Image (cartoon, rainbow, N blue to C red; front, top):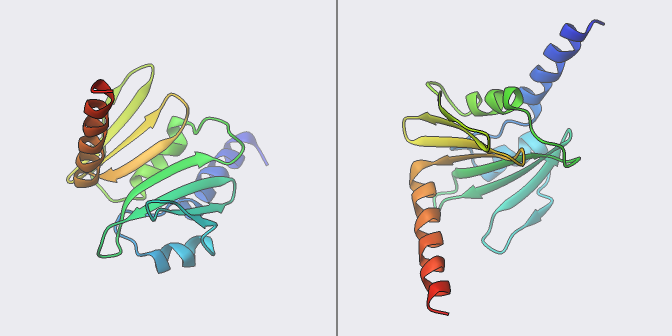
Amino acid sequence: MNMKTITITLLLALSTFASARLGETESQCVERYGEVNSIGKSGERYFSKNGIFLTVRFNDKGKAIYLQYSNADGSDLQVSHAQILVEANGTGWVKDRVSKTLTCWDTSGSVAFLNKTGVLFVSTERELDRMMDEQDKRKKELRAF
């Protein structure tokens, strides 16, 4: 097998085995990845499959609204692999910002960004706004400390 064939095979495997999608239910995620490894304090579900760690947060209707992907071995998730995972979450994604520390994609109602540590975040805009509000609240609390 030549290097091009190996690369294409790897990319197809990533898109098939590590691509939870916004809007999926927990049972759909379990079907795709197997049983939940653990549950976080805020109810997020942790999965691991084929060298990818995945965190999924669900809304009160049981739909995935936040996904976090990282390589299980601690290596950086490459931009080309992140692009495949982003596109698995629907159509119309546009890479709208690239810097030394961040690559961002945007589509109607959803955002994604790959940070400098090689972790990919995919979220609905509503969930991102909620998280930012939470962060702002925490900053105010810390300033008053």
